[in-house]
Length: 158
Image (cartoon, rainbow, N blue to C red; front, side):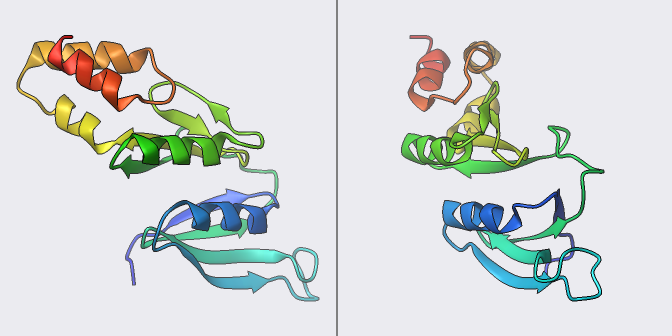
């Protein structure tokens, strides 16, 4: 069992979120769903909370109320191997009401913030070549969805 588990607070639409989230990455699945009974506190049969995994990482999602809203102070970061993975995840998460932000950040249709980040970006940013790091930084600050080829060109100063 994972020692620390992120808990996402929702106000309804949990089944829709579970379907989307577990479709994004391999090794993702719903583990357990607990529904409200006749005693409440929510409508009988509605999901109270669920446990699920994304790429083997454990999460809990709770059907709370409107008291707490997701915001960008907490985000989920997916490290992507290549541009097709960046593109696929970006499309899946911004469709049907999601919103693009800057520098690889987006908000999905449920209000949850995500960072869709190529692993190559981290490698470039770890370089000892401070000029190259500066060029990559200037490049990604202008982007919404990150473009690996454009970042590579900036790194090489082309």
